[in-house]
Image (tube, helix red, strand yellow):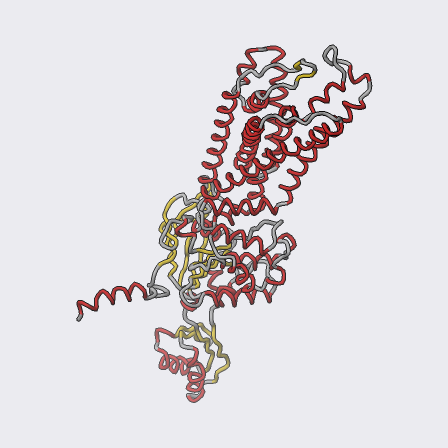
Length: 324
Length: 287
């Protein structure tokens, strides 16, 4: 019976979708990917990147960090100086790769004398997609009312939405989006964010580059921070933020210290001076800790959580200040 | 996939106003300059217009060039270089605009590879050039018919074989110009520089410098010139014969024959396509 079953199991296994997320199938993989311009400029410096099927991966970095150069290399638009990359299991820019990838790189570029509809119809011709997809994608990005107007008359936000429609035309397994909310008004940004979150559900993988931290925080399941062409940190947003701390100020100081050490352990309590302590603790325990301090006769004059924002982490990792 | 790229390019040509403007302008000039103004000049030109003409001829005798039996020769005489400039601009626009609009990255992130897209584009450009040439001959044939009817002359076209050969030769001449423009646009990754340098080469190097040098070097210069492309477009055009006015031929026989011209033009087209393909395949798309 087991012998008879095994071919069936093998077929079932082949049909079964591969596992999604970290540890699953790698849809983007780079090893030592490097791009130099002359001897002086290193745009991307030995980048090792893995993006897994089903992830919404945020590629975060300040302007000039090498995000767009990396994405261009993944699409085969520019060739690496050193290192290698595989996208959807094939060489970047090859037909085998491109057929499964939809992309926006920087500002979407289309033919100004064609309407939005005709631009997508043209792309559908190039990539062998049924014309019916054109209407569907235009509707998906809410461009149907302006579909037959010339691209040159579109606002920046409409151009961006047409770019997203073009990226979706092939129903790609991997979406590579370079700053997709550029030029959009707040409502447009929210719409695109929600669209990307929707698109990232299930098995589709989204690799999105941005310097907008809030955007990445809301959309991405995993984030890689790039600085001067190198990944300087990678993980979920929570992992990057690290553990939260609780600041407590209470007198008498010795009683407060004893209570706090009893609550979380000596190694997680740090005296900051002036009867102030910093605790690494699950913030849900804040009320409980406060009650115990008060019950022990400690006068609590300050109690607040210190949760690092992604922006703090970003500043720390990239050495940038403001201007984001 | 080349067929998809080819269809896509044709789709763009049909909808692109610049393509229509160029083709319509070429045809309008063919009617206006090639026939209407020339006819008016030959018919109503003053006696001073006859000065410098071959002995025994008047300006009205030149109307014979406008009649159907000479429409192939007349088309080549007037349009082999002037129309070539239109083909050059067409070749430049087809490729150069993609760089200007940044649409090269859009093209190259679709399904087909770079060379597939390039050869689809070149195939579509070839069709466009063929249409231009065929339309030019058709317009000239129609114009010459109208003039023959006005003058009450017999309508006698050259044989179909001559017309077909002329369209093929015109296709090769304009194909060279278009390939030249396409390659220049690929090299410079823009349209303005490509058109400027293309025209400068044609007008200054081949037309002006060689015609000046011919005054000094004669045959030696012609022997050098025979390896240059525009000279060969002229040889090919001249191979269809000269228009004779009262049995007198105004021009000299071409320095090289049609076979030489065809082979050399094909070689130039192949080199331009190869340069475009090599650069398109290797270069980074950074905008």
